[in-house]
Every structure is written in structure tokens, then in C-alpha cells.
Image (cartoon, rainbow, N blue to C red; front, side):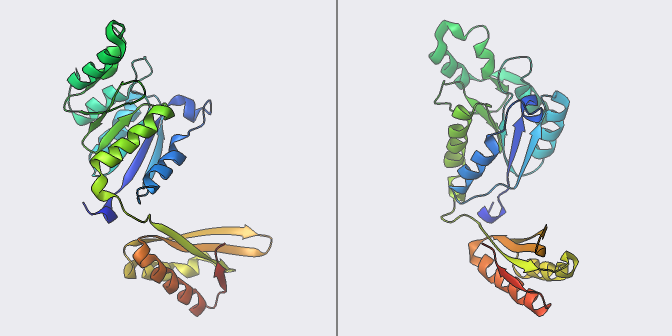
Length: 252
């Protein structure tokens, strides 16, 4: 798959996030991690600790080519369902992974039994993701990568996956995000211009963010994506806005 076609998604699992008991830190850090490699996120979802919901979502995402990082729910407590749901979604059985078994035994010795060893039970056919923090690994199935919820572990494990499985997709420059501020223009009058821009510059996405200010209506109109086309695409939008009779200024 060409790097321009990569879609990277996040699944952030946990009732504590949805209830507000804990604030999610994975989303902003994931943006930073992929951005350092010239990549960007395509989507993100928050999921409850509900097996039916997790399985349904994983069944859907596993049917696509997206690279997916899932945070949380791979422990061995009763509210951890991700390992089991991943197996159901993939249509395979759960089994103790031999490399995970070796890692957990090496870290905990006899204390690995009877409970800690259960954290090495993964869907059949999984690959382990090393965990330098405490040697309890995560696991990968295809392009789905399952990480613990603890930031101190998960973020270095995500970096390991990107650097070891997707190094060929890294880019020297991240996708750009550039825009102008259009003054007192109805958004509906810019739609044809935006569609023309998409047709001419397919490596970019066009966005429109309207706001109401004390000075009047303002629209942040811009493009994001391949740096090679973004500048030309924005110039096309600038010319089109002027041709429609609206004033614009560079976004600060």
C-alpha cells in the first residue's frame, strides 16, 4: 500500500474514559507519535467495556485495510474483554502464546501463575508486541495492534510497531494543514469551489470550519495532506474565493 493511502485508526477502550473518571491521554499522544513519522491519524473511537460493542467494532475494522491501534482491556480482570473480543472478531480461538509465556515467566517466575500468565493468552496466530516496562506483551493480528491502557507502556509499544512493521511508510515531512480565513461568505457558496479543488488535487483534503465572531461570519477554508500539492491547492482556493467576490486573509 502506498504511504498516501495509509489510514491509521485508534480504538480507546474503557468505561472510565466515557464516564469522565479518567481523562484520555492516548489520542493527543498518538497524534504526536504518528506525526513524528510523517503520518497522521484518520479516525478514532471511544468504546465501553462491553464485549458485544467491542466485538462488533473489531469485526468491522478487521474487514478493512486500516492500521488500527487499540488501547486498553487486554489485562486479566473481569472487566478486560479485548483479547476475547479480538479472537471472536477474527474467527479464531484463544491460546497461550509461547513467546508471551516465556516473557511473563522470565519476569515473574513462579508468581506468573495462576493469574499473570493469563495475560499471554492471545488469539491464535497473533504476533507479540514487546513491552519493555514489565515484559507483559501486547499482540497484533494482521494490521490490528492491541496495547495496554497504561500510557507508560502503550506509547513505547506503539512506537515499536510503527518502527518495526511500518518503517517503509514513514515520510520525511508530515502532511500539512494550511488555510485562509474567508470573511462574510455563506458556506454554501463555497461548495462548488471546494469540490473543484478536490478533483484537481486528489492528494489533499479540503475543509471548511465556519464560526460566528463579533466582526461577523468567518470561515476557515483550507487543505491538508501531501505537502507537494497543498500549496497549489490553497492558491486555487484563494483565487476562487476572490473570483466569488469575498475577502480573505491568511490564517494566523
